[in-house]
Amino acid sequence: MARVPMFLLLLFVLPVAAAAQVYIDSPSTPGEIWPSGLPGEIKWRLIGTPDAVKIEVSYDAKQSWNLLVDCYPDVGHWTWAIPSGIESQQCYLRIHSKYLATCFYDYISTTTDFSFIITVPPQVTVRPIDIDEISSGECFDVTIDIVNRGGFEMNLWFDVDMYDASLVIFSDEENDMPFVLPPFGSMTVTRPFCIPYGHRSGDWNVKVMLWGVREEDGDYNGPRLFDSGWIHPMAVAVERATWGGIKSEGR
Image (cartoon, rainbow, N blue to C red):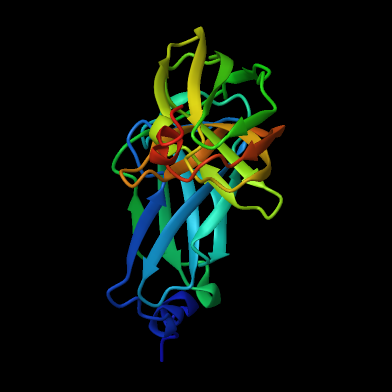
């Protein structure tokens, strides 16, 4: 009696990935910018019974693929240390569903149906903020000097946050500013940050960030292209809860 090869026997005992699907949630947008030399978080969802993934990237419009991680547990995200020195506008991501018990076999896979960009992150300098105290209902300006050290145009969002000692974070989303930075270009960008009436008083701190993708709900997605850290302590005082309260005093 002829012996059945072992790899054929294994195929009979492999789990069946019934109705399995793979969705890539990040990268999420055509032309999204991922910074070389910095971390970026890849996000996905698996539908079905697979419990692991293999992640690959192409830098040349899917002509070749580079393995990033294999047989990684399905936790929905993985932080990629993006290599330095890579510049490409033709990057694609591919994720395969797998089983931890049989990691030699790839099941269902999906690829981003758009290209994203990997390039050198911009060089950013935050100019000193010239006030240390502010009242609710007032605004102050935040200015950055920014240099594009790469050869691709950058579509960016200028985001500013504040937080207090209890780690309550406030974002002035209405004044978050989009701008375009040309290849190897430099510019100075200023945006206001406004404290709403009745805002919580106390000691706050300011942070400046740059992003490449802003969703319709106002949330940012994709890697953070710049983060200043908490750089400027500021005291916030409450004057009145509404503009009407200030007007009633004849101011």
